[in-house]
Amino acid sequence: MGRGQGVSGVASAEVVEVAQGSPRAWWLAVGVLVLCGVIYFQTWRDLWPVWMDTDRTSYTHGPLVAAISLWLMWRLRPALRAAEVRPAWSALPVVLALSLAWLVASRAGILTVHTVLWPLVAATALVAACGWRIAGAFAFPLGYLWFAMPAWDYLSRLLQTITVVAVDALNGLTRVPAVVVGDTVLIPQGRFEIAAGCSGLHFFVIGLAIATLAGEVHRDRLRTRILLVALVAALALVANWLRVYFIILAGYLSDMQHYLVTVDHYKFGWLLFAIAMVGFFLILNRLPAAASARVETTGPAAPTRWAGGYVAGLAALCILPVTSLGAHAFNPRPAMPALAARAVAGYVGPLSPSPAWQPRFVGPDAEVRVAYLSPARHVIDYYGNRYVDQSQGHELIGYDNTLLDPATSRVVQQRRAVREVDGHALPVVEITTEMDGGGNWAVMYHYRVGSRVLAHPLAVQVASGFGSLWGSVPAELHAAAAPCTPDCDETLDELASLLAQLSRHE
Image 1 (cartoon, rainbow, N blue to C red):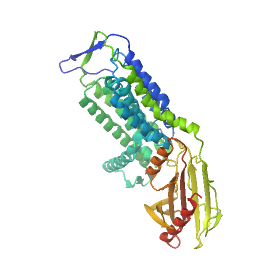
Image 2 (image 1 turned 45 degrees about the vertical axis):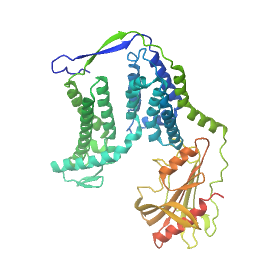
Image 3 (image 1 turned 90 degrees about the horizontal axis):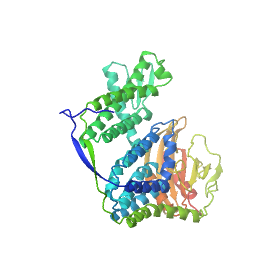
Image 4 (image 1 turned 60 degrees about the vertical axis):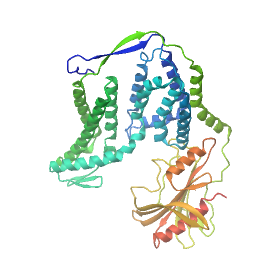
């Protein structure tokens, strides 16, 4: 990939001195990274299904990003030839802190956190074991891995909203008779939902990865790199807006019979993105080339004592995960009461639950769903589950878990509250929702992690992560729902009374 020359027609040369000798520093750094990959392997085990997900597709570029990162590390060998290894003892506490944070997140199954932390753990371990210069050389290859991490999902809603606004403006400019209601575009011939998959997140992230890599390969100045990233971000966004707009236009002109409407529009999006990237590379090729490097060799670096600090860095990297793994191996699962339908004082049951309320959770270790008749003769549905050792795809707080099906219910109000039941404080989440064909329902739930009763998902994840560092700690959900008869406030009182008894461990 060529680049234009400077204003004078000749790029200036930058002299880089490289010490003669064997690439010992590079191999020592690779040793740290390999050990980090083995000890913190759960990150890669959890990432692989995300990269292979052909339904959501947002991170199917992950293996390519990982391969590029490895290539960037490989090309560091000449720059680190016989570089001086100077372990930084002051970085050891940071390694331990990040290792603990990674361990808590991985035990709680918080994918976005422990995947983002992995490059940070690896980088600080390099500082501790090899020194700042060597860690600095590996900083870009490690940071580049973030383009394959699912933390970008947090931008999806913002990009989706921007797409709706941009497409509405394009419809107005071209006089397409369209009305936007929320995320839905209505035209006389039909309707289009600009869903999360239409946000253009995949194109956006890949574009940023391309621009960032181009700036690194050509060793551009920081200002040039920022301009490249801004340019490719704008091109990726515009390409996605045009993709959605052209699909709506095709539906309008063909009475919803066009190929882009009835068969496939994803490949069309890649075509527009490819055209945008051609424009990007044409602009890139016209930018002045960065200063070329002229390598001169020097004598070998003076030997230093590095072995003790290197071993200390490796030990800091390993000690917490290995200790936690050993504790789990030697500590059996604690005895837990059965999570099963049981009688409740003052209530008739357990009975068969109503089909109107269908909670859905993936992979619990135990699950129960029944109904009870309250003292006021109202039928209350109850759902409970338990997760013992949580992991990705097997966790209490997960994207695919839901108490209410969004296709059949619409949340009217949701709030956290503390209920007083029999003199005890009961933290809960209260929901009022409209059910299709069933009127208004009241739903109440809370979580239990070990002996703690919680109502906030983040608190549940943190408590689960810390609690399971040295052994298995069960995390449970207890939920109840019923039609609002005669009103939702009275129904919520009944739900709280039932939950207080069913979630209590005898």
